Amino acid sequence: MTARVHCLRNRLMLAFAVFALVVAGLFGLYVAVFVYSVEDRFFDAMLEQEAQQQLDQRATRGTWSPPRNAFTTIHDSPATFPSDLKATFDAEPWRREIAGTQGRHYHLRPVQPEGAATPGWLVAEVSQQLVVRPMRSQILALLAWSGLAVVVVAILAGAWLARRTTRPLSKLAALVDEMVPDRLPVGFAGGFPDDEVGVLARGLDNLSGRVRAFIAREHAFTRDASHELRTPLAVIRSATEQLASEPGLSERGRQQLEHVQHSARQLEQTVITLLTLAREENVEQDATPLAVLPVLEQVVIEQAALLEGKPVEVRVDVPADVRLPVPGPVLHMLLANLVGNAFAHTRSGEVHIEVASGRLRIRNTALAGDAEAIMRPFTRGEGSAGFGLGLAIVQRLCARFAIDLRIEGSEHATVASFSVQ
Image (cartoon, rainbow, N blue to C red; front, side, top):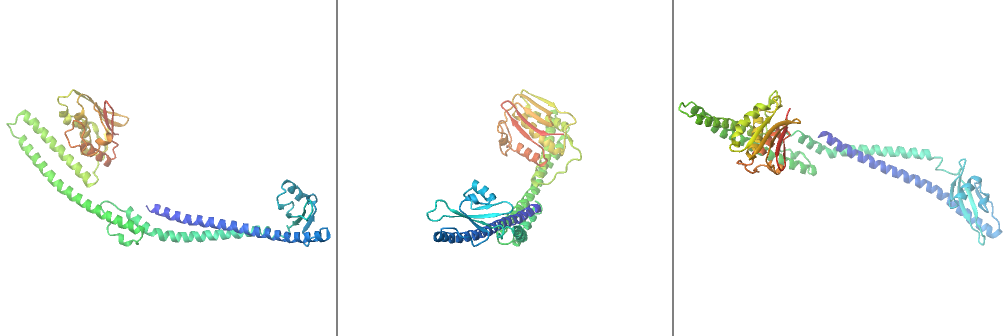
C-alpha cells in the first residue's frame, strides 16, 4: 500500500516537472521567434526607408542613387544579383529573405518606379549586421539553463505539495493495510483533516465499527451455538452407548443403533466444521496430505441408503495413493455432500467416481441444471430432501482450503470434480 502512495506522489511530481518543461519549451520557442522577428523587422524597415528614398531620387533625376548603407545595393533586374542569390531567387522568386553561401544572408525588396515596366531590387547583404545568429548558441544555452532551473523548481515545489497532499492519504493507507479482522481500529477519523480524505476516513471508521460489532455478534453466536449443539449430541452419544449395552437388543435394532451413532459422530464433525467456518479461524491441517480412498469408501457406505430401491451402479476407480491436504472432517464433509447429492439425484444408471487429469470426478446420470444456481444457499435440486445448503457449505469449504471445485452438467450427466494430489 505504501508503494502505491509513493507511486501517486511520484506521479504528482512528474506532472509538475512535465508541465514546467512544456512551459519552458514554449517560452523558449516564443523568445526565439520574437528575437528573429524583431531582427527581420529591423532590416525590412531599413529597406523600406531606402526604397522610398530611391523612388524619390528616380522621380527627380531619372536614375538610382547609391544606397546610404554600404551593405545595400540596387539592381535594375535580378540578372545582376550575386550568383548565390540569383540561383535561389530564380528557383523561388517569392522569397524575400535568402541564405547565401559562405555565411552570406540577403534581404530583398522590390522598388517599382512610376511608369516602369519592371521593378528594381534593393539587396541588403546583412551577414555582418546580424545580431541573433552570432549569439544563437549563447541564447539557446541561456534558454536551456533557464528551462532546467524552472524544471528543478517545479520538481521541488511538486515534491513539497505532493508530500503535503498525500501525507493524510499515506497515513490512511498504512492504517488500512494493517487492518486484520480480529483487530480493527476504531475512532481514528479524528486524526484526519476535514477534506476528501477525512470523509473517506470517517466512512472507513464507521465501517470498521460496524464490522467489529458484527464479528463480536458472530463470536457470541458461535460460542452459544457450540454449547447448544454439542450438548444434545453428547446426550445422544451417551444414550446410544447405554442402549448398545442392552442384552436384549435385536440384530436389526443394533444395526439401526449403529446408524444413529455414526450419524451423531458425523453431525458432530459437521458442527465443528461449520463453527470453524463461521468463526473464520484457521483449521489446523494435517502434517501430511490425507488419503482420499479410505474416506471415500466410508462415505459410499454411509450414503448407500440413498440408493435403496434404485437401479443404480456405483463404480469407484480411485488409486490408493491419491491424497488431499485437508483435515479429515473437511474431506469427509466434502465427499459426503458430493457423493450424497450424486446418489440422491440419480434415479437410474450409474455413479462413477474416478481420478482423471489430476482431479477426482464424481459423475452421475442426472441433469445438473444451472451450476451457479445450485451453489447458492437454499437452492434445492429436484429430488432433494434437504434445505439446499449442502453445496453452498461445500463451496465455502473449498474456498477456505483452496480446493478448485467445479460443477459441470449436460443433458445426460452431472460431474462434480476437484483437484487432488
